[in-house]
Amino acid sequence: MIEINIISALTDNYIYLLHNKEKNITAVIDPGEAKPVEDFLNDKGLHLDEIVNTHHHHDHTGGNQKLREVYGSKLIAPIYEKERISNIDSFVSDNDIISIAGIDTKVIHTPGHTIGHVCFYMPKENTLFSGDTLFYLGCGRVFEGSMEQMWSSLAKLKTLPENTLTYCGHEYTASNAKFSNHLDPHNELLKIAFSEIK
Image: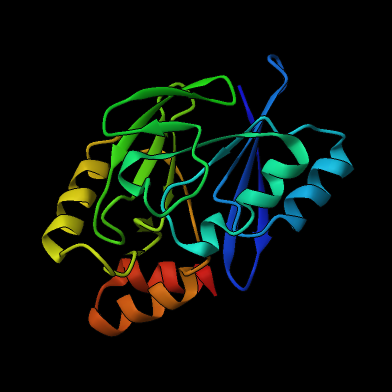
């Protein structure tokens, strides 16, 4: 069992700090900036062992270098992003089973938002770190890939168990709900979700 801490960063980013108390391993996923991560680690008296990136965008990698300098952390990132993320120690690709904070994790290649985007799924924890592929009531903008690739990526994620706990890269819930409600104004379930979000 791991402890997952949510750290807000930049304007609407989420950074996830995972701590495995049993194995005393700490990892951070998508550190868009270093300072809030350092502050959290210092407050808890933790050392950062691993930095994990879902994709190359600066708001998910901006803290990599500083955190590596301070903690000597190992950087884990998609092989598809090797030209765009510096100093990767461990490359991962589709269907790899890797360890993040001592927990077996499946790598799922989800092109669309970027060509090299990956998500990380922890089966025993029933937890997905979806980066900028999947959000509540929405998906990431398609910047580099195609709509067909994004559709295929979302179809892959749809095969995960229905009760999978999903940690996304940004807080887009209210804007996604507003947009969904605009597209489908007569959907009663959306109306309920919208009022709960408000």
